[in-house]
Length: 103
Image (cartoon, rainbow, N blue to C red; front, side, top):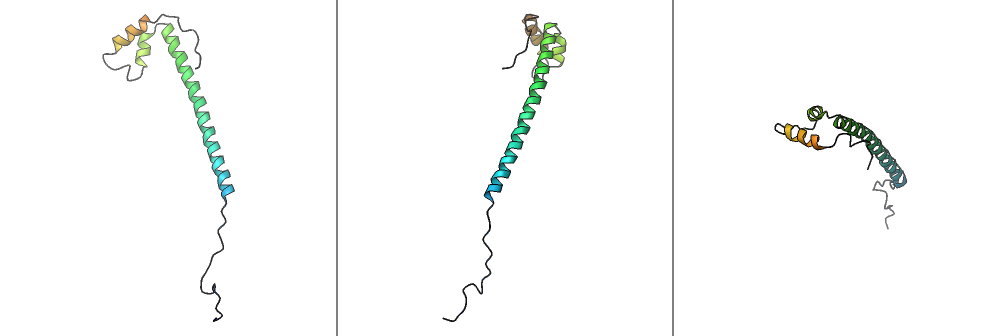
């Protein structure tokens, strides 16, 4: 043997430490935060939707069909749909919607 150490000529780095527990914890916290954000948004949207449904039923019960048509979505308020929508709303019994309930 020549007496040369096998590690003499090569630069070896210390083994990398994998922080899988920390990675898992941080990933879990991020997922928890995203779930909380989605839940908050769904609650806010539900509140806005309930208010819009209440307002629609109020207008329907008061026979304010023209106002409903003006505020309707583009699919309902296309040209030529006015008479069809108003006729449909007129056959819905007024005062039939008293309370809005969630599904």
